[in-house]
Length: 149
Image 1 (tube, rainbow, N blue to C red):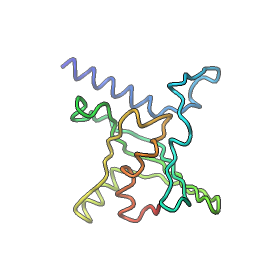
Image 2 (cartoon, rainbow, N blue to C red):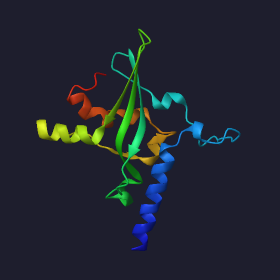
Image 3 (tube, rainbow, N blue to C red):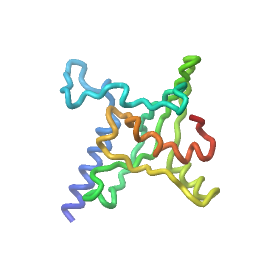
């Protein structure tokens, strides 16, 4: 029982720390090299190289991963903010998505879902998901034509 409480507390702490941004930190504080993440890591490009996408995590679930011993520490993402920049026109689009609601809608309409909302804690930095994990979060929204990327 005490092990479950420890896991729950650590998940809550991890969830809160993932949603913090650099601007929330103290102004005079310095970050170490290990904490630094290049801005390029947050960006993914479409197949033609005409659009950039960044995904910011807005809300995570407090649910504990079923196989954390095997797959490591992960969080279940509920809401995200997607920012898409068109490189040819410099136009920027933003939209908030409730991934859980989209997943349920796709399951109801098409009888399947492809979203994997469990993201490793190490793949969320400064509140943003690294570019290599973008496809796993937007796959259902793309299938329902909510997003064209």
